[in-house]
Length: 170
Image 1 (cartoon, rainbow, N blue to C red):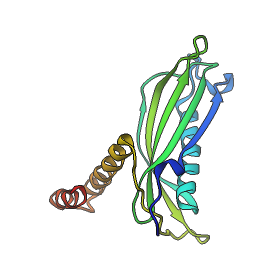
Image 2 (cartoon, rainbow, N blue to C red):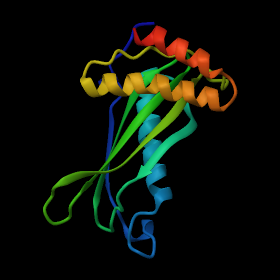
Image 3 (cartoon, rainbow, N blue to C red):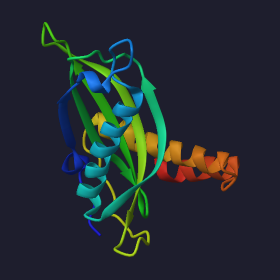
Image 4 (cartoon, rainbow, N blue to C red):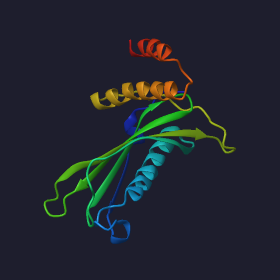
């Protein structure tokens, strides 16, 4: 299977924050933002794998800034690394100021998706070939995050994770 560039999976979704999507402080509900990120990440994973994809985990979410009512929100999702059947998807959330039009990063997240066949059985996905500095940084970080997750789940000994990282990072 031939490696793919992360840019081929890039998914951008832009929408406005409406009153029904806000909390009593008139900011976007966190759950609404999670759903938007999940949809964008799912599309990115599907673009990379060309398979049905399912959310395996939400590994990291940072709600750094509130997103007020009326804001234009852009969710950008890109596959940062592919393993055998799973893919890490990195998500950046941008907010556009209603008055100046200036865009700033509001939040970010990392999701993991698994590609499955028509029967729901995990299926192999192409590797990622990072090209830019940011893609390489996220690609390298994905291996460390996966190893940490396996260590915490008791599926990998810490010493073995260090040995594997040395193999993959050389």
